[in-house]
Each structure stands twice: as structure tokens, then as C-alpha cells.
Amino acid sequence: MTVAAVAPRTPAAAAGLARGDRIVAVNGHRLRDAIDFQFHTGDERLELTVERDGVTAVKRLTRRGTGLGLELAAPRPGDIATCANKCVFCFIHQLPKGMRKSLYVKDDDFRLSFLHGNYITLSDLDEASFERIIEQRLSPLYISVHATDPELRHALLGRPRHSAEILPRLERLAKAGIRMHAQIVLCPDLNDGAHLERTVFELAPLHPHVATTAIVPVGLTRHRERLPALRSLTADEARALVATADGWQRRWLAELGSRFVFLADEIYLLAGLPLPPAAAYEGFAIAEDGIGLVRRFEDAFTRASARQRARRKGARRHAVTVVTGEMFAPRLSALLARAGFDGSTIHLAAVRNDFFGPAIGVAGLLTGRDIQRHLATSADLGRAVLVPSVAVRDGDGIFLDDLTPADLARDLGVPVKVVQPTPAALLRAIRDS
Image (tube, rainbow, N blue to C red):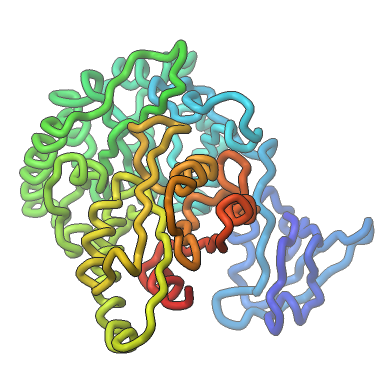
């Protein structure tokens, strides 16, 4: 494992560790990956076998608190277990050609599921990996279920050469005490209706080991040449699904003590229905899957804007442009209006996604060129353009189409600031601009 960074005044810094060091063993245990590192660094006193410039040395650390003060480098694409499935709805298959190679990596790696919350199918998991998950208590894991009917799931995964049956795998992990979060990518006319009900009702008996089941709508881009014909959820179907899920939640809350089934925010927005209150998300355990992100943002925005309102009173305001996707734009506009910002202060840019197609309305999949094209028609961008950081990828400060915020700033003639997707960060960026 390669050290990516060492924080000052930490046990790692005191031991002399530095960026670029390669940690090969902890207390005599050889390391395969970051999970082994975490598993073997729980003791108070540690001996790390480290390679630097071809020289091997032992670094001794004494843990203070929970962290050691070092960050490990992310795995390279060649080190990741890739997915052998050809899911009919796979987003990576819908990417156009010519983008950077890292975007085409399909991971199905249980280690990334444990470390980063990536969803995996379990279809390629071998016996050694199962035993390691159980031995090292790698929990929670995030599982792409999609359907519990074996034949239907096999079809959804693109009819791979290996078995796609999921329930026996989940049951084995549940018996070992592994906590899991299940996901269903909902494809109208395929795994909806009675198939969806079967999946939900066959997963529920595995609660609390299967802690949640997330239902998210299929995302379809305009780059679907020679791919299976699929369609998006309609507004009427979204409204019907909300009503159905509400009934399921009331049942499971009474029987299991948890709502168990949760719908993606996108489904409520498509249906034009109110989002559930914060308590209905039971701690926002799967917010990164788009379950409750909007509710959490809106509630936090209301609190943060109330705290800052007094400070803004009487202050001179300068206009700024705030970039977002078409889906969230109406709700963000309402939030800004309730917080006292009007059109002379905030220019809200609801950017259409021409790169992936109009069916993709989230801010995280906006490209630099779509933002540039949209803003080029604006007469006044104000003192700055604020872009959500979720649209910037790979830690290199670049959009999906390899443009950078600096490129945008040059083309638009105003500063472009990348803002973390939190209410406090957005309000602070508006104030500072």
C-alpha cells in the first residue's frame, strides 16, 4: 500500500512516514490491500514494514485516538476487480467513446464496496472472497440486487456465464452477521410491478442484516446505440410507486421497526410530490445513493440561511451565478427565494445536459461544455460563477469532458469557483463573492 499523504503532528509523521512510502506489512502481517491495512492496524503499538527507494525499514508507531494520520493511495484500475456482467441498464455502456479511460472501469470489487460504498453484484464473488468478508467482518456491503427472481436477474445482468441467483448469497452473508444495503435499479416493463413486489418481499425477511432496500430509477443517456431498448419512468408511474412504497413502509415499520424500502429523491421530484420528512430516512444511511440528499440539503439550507440572514441584513450584495442541474433547479430557486435572495442577487442557471441527453438532469453529470454553452447566452454572470463540486471528477479538478474550471473562467471572463454541495458552503461562497 502506497502512502498518499501524511498529516503533520500525527503518529505517522512522528514515525517518519512520508508520501510515496510503500507499506508492505503491519506487525509481521503481509498486506494485500487497504482492507488488510485497516484490519491489522487496530492495535495500540504498531510496527510497519516500509519500502522507500528500494530500502526496507521498520517504522514504529503508537496510536493516539482513532487515526494514524496517513492517507493511502487509491487503487489503480488494474488492481480493481472488474465486472463481467453486461447489465442492460449499465451506465458505463452508455458513455460515448473518446473519454478518459478511468471512466470506463466497471468495478465489482467487494473491497471498494466496504471502503467506499460502491454497489456490487456478488455474481463473481469466489469462495476465498466470501471467507475473507466473513473473517474480517467487512460490513456494511452495498449489493446490486435488481431482482430476486433468478431468471429475471440473469437477464438484467446481461445473461452472464455464471449464476446470477442472489438470495443464497445474501442469506449466507446475513447468517455470518454481515450488514448489507440492497439496491434495485428500476427498469419499467422489466423489474417493476409484481417483480418489484416479489423482490422487496423476499428481501424483507433478511432484515436487519439487509438493512435497507433502495429503489432508484434507471438513468438513460442518448448514447445507447446497439443497447437493449429501455425507457424512463413516467410521472404517473412515479406517483403510483410513491403510493405503493408508502404502504410498504408503513407495513415494514410496524413489523420490522424500520421502513426498510426507500425511494430515490428523483422519483419524488419526477412525481411532483413532497419529499418525506427527515425522520423518514432513518439517519440517511444511504444518502450517497440519492436517498434523502435533497431533504437533508433543504433542511440544512433553511437552518443555515436563518443563521446568516442577520449578518446579511444591510450588507451590500453583488450578483453571482449559481449552476445546478435541471432537476433540482426549481427547488433550489424556492430555497433561495425563501432565504431572501432575489433575481438581482442570484442568477440561477439550470443547465440542460446535452452531452448525456435531457433525461439526465442531475448536477453531478454536467459537463464543462454544457455549462459553458448555457452561460455563454447570459448577459450578466455577476462577480463569479459557482459550480457544484459533484460535477468535478477524479480529484484533478476536471469535468467529465476534461474541461477545467480555469477553462470555463477563461471562456466566460469571470472567476469560476467550485463549491462543496452543502448549504453552508454555498451560502459562504455567495457571501464571499
